[in-house]
Image (tube, rainbow, N blue to C red; front, side):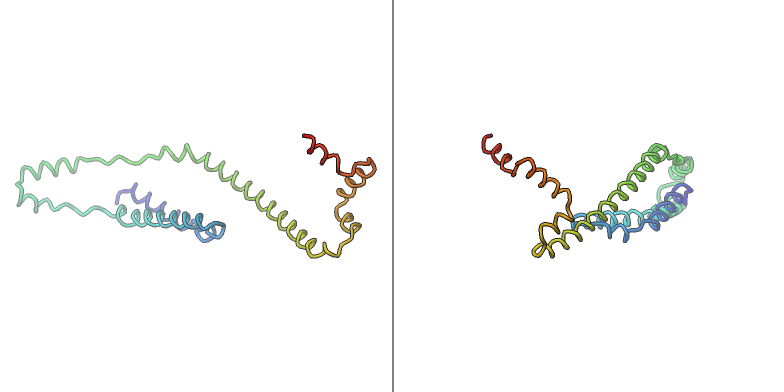
Length: 177
């Protein structure tokens, strides 16, 4: 096996082992996202399998004697000479160094977005608990109890009453518009 192909195969195999497919699948919300994720995983596994099998094996050695018997020595020797003179260039990765900083920056951005999302989820969960609690108590709650929980609304209503603005001016403006 050529050194380059073996290295690529080893890297792909190790990358496949490090991917937390189950962890990522748990984060998916929609059925469409799950289908796309499944397709991605299947494609990754197929490519990885090909790298591990088809491209990681040494080619079968050529039986030059077999061909000499059927075709002739001169032509086979010419092919053998050309075959043995072929040099496969070493792979030089020029792409990864260009995109690695961009990828690393995206990972940082992703981590920040994840933290922001988790904080927003916590806030929304608290708000849901508050709304559910309020929903249970609203039918027996007095205005004073409600305003005790929402002092900003009490201030707004008190200001409107104090300014003799009973909320009708907004209605009149809409009617005149």
